[in-house]
Amino acid sequence: MPESLDQIPTLEQIRQTQLAISAMVRRTPVLSSETIDSMCGARLFFKCENFQKVGAFKMRGAASAALRLTEAEKAKGLATHSSGNHAQAVARAASLLKIPAYIVMPDNAPAIKQAATRGYGAEIIFCESSQQAREAALEDLIQRTGATFIHPYDDYNIIAGQATAAAELIAEVEQLDMLIAPVGGGGLISGTALAAHYLLPDAKVIGAEPAKADDAYRSLASGVRQSNASANTIADGLRTHLGEKNFAIMQKYVDEIITVTEEQIVAAMRLIWERMKIVIEPSAAVPLAAVWKQQRQFAGSRIGIILTGGNIELSKLPF
Amino acid sequence: MPESLDQIPTLEQIRQTQLAISAMVRRTPVLSSETIDSMCGARLFFKCENFQKVGAFKMRGAASAALRLTEAEKAKGLATHSSGNHAQAVARAASLLKIPAYIVMPDNAPAIKQAATRGYGAEIIFCESSQQAREAALEDLIQRTGATFIHPYDDYNIIAGQATAAAELIAEVEQLDMLIAPVGGGGLISGTALAAHYLLPDAKVIGAEPAKADDAYRSLASGVRQSNASANTIADGLRTHLGEKNFAIMQKYVDEIITVTEEQIVAAMRLIWERMKIVIEPSAAVPLAAVWKQQRQFAGSRIGIILTGGNIELSKLPF
Image 1 (spheres, chains in turn yellow, green):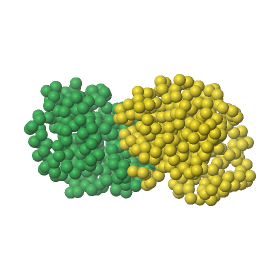
Image 2 (cartoon, helix red, strand yellow):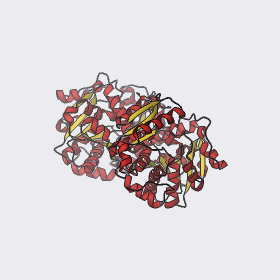
Image 3 (cartoon, chains in turn yellow, orange):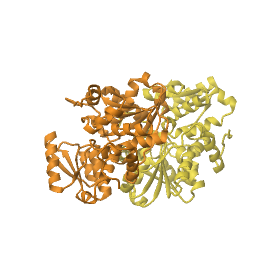
Image 4 (cartoon, chains in turn green, red):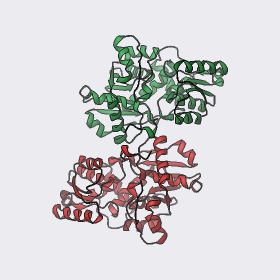
């Protein structure tokens, strides 16, 4: 197994990661839609991480981080706090490796997410819905179990894992003028930017972000990591703040951040559901919303887009 | 181009059809879900016609029928009555062949279906929402234009086209113990049964039908074509009555019809959306509902299922 990474992953390390996680993740398909292409006046190639195991690209990072633990660490298990896709990815990675997983979740987390996480065999530790309570609960369980904390994004092992999605997309499509991925904590966009830097250095890399959680836009503009006073966006996967390691990579290798409105996100999501007949979560629609918003900028381009995931409560759709 | 068929398609004719329509249809993927397999205790192979052009298998039959017209017939165009997937398939086939299409629709047809049909360049002729009004409007437009009526199912050219979905599925998966397709007018199930008869003669062929529109079940049981007094099922693609040619093929080559409740259809549809992250219409969920209902019968089997289509109004979902 490759060793744990303590600096920005090299191309060689991303390639090792790809090989190492290949038995734990799916090589997802790249889909296109003639209708959406002609609406946008561009050629769009969608890397369908909604078809990934646990329904999201997060499985790549979790597998990458889990595989790099020593045997002694593995035996004590994985820990994280999340009620979203990262929780399920850590739980699933642990179950594939036949090791324990401990997930701290706020006690108001949706029943469906609790059930999915428990379905992978993880132990859920409930806490109050505050950052402080979450960190205390995590600290406590690590003391108790000796499990290793798997950060959702601010970690080079995670970043190397998320980079494999873009690496596969680039290998499959070859000619791309740009890559667009959504920005939450920055795990995916920093991995995507690294993959493009190594494998397709002429391509632009663009982050897409809800205007209601535009910390990445403000951070890159000001050169200082910013946070969101609130982040009340339907793209619930993108409400988190940028990680430190992620921001450093983005400053080097991300060309631009485009922000979009809630209405643009919902319209893009609906277009993908209706035309491509696939289920994606709101966060996954943010890059198409960006292309649609700034059509003139993208006219005639070949654009790779990471569709981050497909986990959404069907009884609470925005249309 | 192959000639128009006036009897049950042979294997050679189905193969010719496959070749002839290949530029007009998509070779759709076959997807599986480990979760659904383990829930059902069987191996399911889903032929994803929701990814077909116009979002439904109907494109295959329409292409097959349209291509078989003489040049003189083509010049006068295609006609049909439908507000569903067949209308869009005929419209799209005509637009690909650069010939006119005339679609008779009830004046209460959903705006979204009107728009889709018109989007392919077809002329819509509205009529009252009765069988009689529909036939009169169709007759009238054929008189006026000389267009050729493309029946939605009771036609050997259509059946040969629909057979190509199962032919592709069998070629891709090879070992299958049975094939299951939904039954409406019988175009798909009769084509599926023929493909299995020629290409996989040991496989069972099963039709799946809503209990609320169980004319195929009663027809096969009694040996006489039956109709539905009403057909108030969510599986709107399956409300039609069996065609004569379709029934004759089914009597020979379909082993069994399984009927399912509305609740079973919705549960199966939800399962496919949630686990496979694809958008399917209610009719497409009927075969999985049948497997789920009669689990013991199917335990350990390798089952090919045709997912018929993915056209559904997102603002009117049953969950």
